[in-house]
Each structure stands twice: as structure tokens, then as C-alpha cells.
Length: 156
Image (cartoon, rainbow, N blue to C red; front, side, top):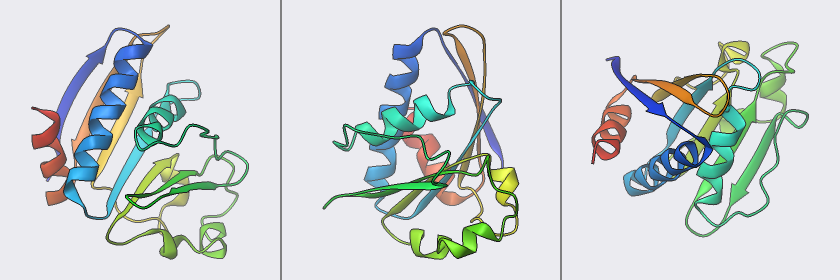
């Protein structure tokens, strides 16, 4: 299952709107969700993740570049934002207890997922981000029934 959706976003606020819409869609599922955020340095992965997380009332959202994971938990959601860019070995994710960040009600946003292969969970959705300046192109693939449910919600 690899449905592809292409979305073009003209500016930063459109990217933030998309992230908020995606966040609301994941909340409506009330299941564990894994989303890979792919793209070069500066493509907008962290910007998209930050807007996604802020949708749930978390004002201070840090990049997990040095910590590997930043978690945002309240009564309605558990979001775990991973950045695997600085991993020297995927096994490092086992040391931080990556398995504890999955399951029903947990959302994982994973940047540089290819560096954690073999350890991280399979994606329900992957978003490849490209662009220049403030415009972005999102190539979105759904890899599971959860991903397909997200696609249905995003299309409304």
C-alpha cells in the first residue's frame, strides 16, 4: 500500500496550516501513528513537526537534534518527535527506550528515519519535503490502513 498525494504549499503559513490539519486527523484516529518526515537539511521537517505539536497546546517545541527525542504529553495526546540525524548507530535508539514511545495513543514524528532503520517502527505515512524559499512540495505516501485513514481525513 503506497498511495501518493502531492501537495504544493506557497508559503510558511500554508505549511503550518497543513501540519495543523494533519495533527487534527491523527487525533481523530485515536491510535498509534508513525510519520516519517524526509528531506534535506532546511527543507522544513522541524517546522512541520513544530506546528503539528503546537496544535495540541504545546507552546514551547524544541528541535530534538541533540536529545534524539522530545516528548510532548498531556491528557489528550502523547507525541514523540525524533531526530535521527546525529545517530552513529541505530542501536542508540534502543538505549533511549524507543519501544516505550509506541502503541495506542502515541504519535511518532521521525526525522531522518533512514538512519534508524531496523530499530524504528514502520511508517504509516511518510512525507518527503522539498522546495526553495518559502514554498514547499510535499510528496506523501501512505503505507498502512492508518495511513489510508489519514489520507481520507486530509482530503476533506
